[in-house]
Structure formats: C-alpha cells, structure tokens
Length: 277
Image (cartoon, rainbow, N blue to C red):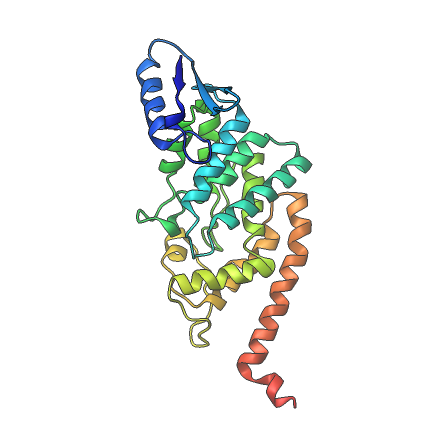
C-alpha cells in the first residue's frame, strides 16, 4: 500500500500527473503478482481525511469521471463542431435514451464519451480504428469484454455515406449512434455543419456543384463539397435512420428546423424576399 503525500497533490487537491504516473508504473509492475493494488490518497491534510481508491479495480463511477475529465481536456480547444460540449450533449442524450431502452448504461456512457477520440475527420490516419479509445480503457483496467463492446460501437458509429449500410450490432450501439446523430440535426446541427465547413475551408453553397449520393465510405470521406450539400448528403437523411423510438420522436422536430432553414436560405440566396417588396 502506498500513501501519496501532500506534496504530490495538485492545487485542486487532486493527485498530480506525476503521482499518477508513479502509481500507474507501480500498478503495472505488480500486476503479475496480485490482481488489485489499493492506494490511499490524502485529500484534506487539515482534517487528515483519507480516501481509498482501488487501481486495477476502479468502480464504474470513478472510471466514468476519469473519462469525462480526460475527454474534456482532449477536446477543449476544438473548433470543428466536435468539441467537449458536443461530446457532453451526446453523452447526456445517450443516458436519456438508455433509460428508455433499458440498455447497459456503463457501456453506453463510455462509448458516448469516447466516440470522437478516433474519428477519421479528426485524425491523420483517416480511419476509425479505436486505438486511442482502447488504450484509454486499458489504462482504466476496464474488463476486456466491456472494452471490446465499447470499441465495436466506436468503430461503427459514424455515418459513412447515403448508400452505405449501418453495421451497428448492439442496442447500446444504436443508442450512442442515435445520440450522436441527434446532435447533427436541428438548430445545433445547423451550427455544427457550418462550423465544420469553416474548419475545412469549404464554401457555404455552390449552385454548380449539386449534392451526391455517396455509394461508398471512400467517396463520402473524400468529398469536398459545399456545406449546404451536406444537408442533402447526410443531415436530412438522418431522421429516417434513427434506431430507437425515443430518437425517432426527437428527430421529427429537429428535422423540420433544418427544412425551414434551408427554405429560408434558398430564398435569401435567390433574393426572393427582396423582390417580394
């Protein structure tokens, strides 16, 4: 058993990165001999309060909180519409849908929190092999079965083109996918679409470049079309591709918001409202 002294606590009372690195190393070295290692973290030196935390057997709530802290830090500076607050909304929506569908909440929450960590749009590899998510789950000593289920969800969550089948294979996956897709439509979906378009230096609209129905993931991934096309190539199709009853109900209203926006956009583009006067 190791006691982390006050000198290894950060200014918030939490364990410093240096201390955690040492803990991780000690845990790794000892894992071959024992299955669990318990450390005492001194949280409040004035009251000599001590909190016992188990590394290598953390409870689910601790793992979720560590994951929240990690993802919030990783996505805090994103400007592509895939920032921490996008992840937060997906996470909270997934919890709500999960409650209605009676699925495994722990798997749903982990997948929702980690779903963009290996997103092809945000990494150089251009695919969605969940290498970083898997590494994180291993660092939290999540059991192999749970980690595999979470990684499978992450690998299949992304929309890959109008003509590409959805290969999601679990109720938990359907829930996280719905939560992610709900954040791609409605008023927030509109804002995120243009944020991503700006991030990729794409034009708002090009009348000479019509939307395409992408038959493969490669076609969809390599598309450089205008942001307005994205509505017709993906966003307007999502309402009918929701998986759960809860998401289908919510999607109806958010879909109408986009339809109204596009009608107004096209009127203003053509100057129809100006000519009406």
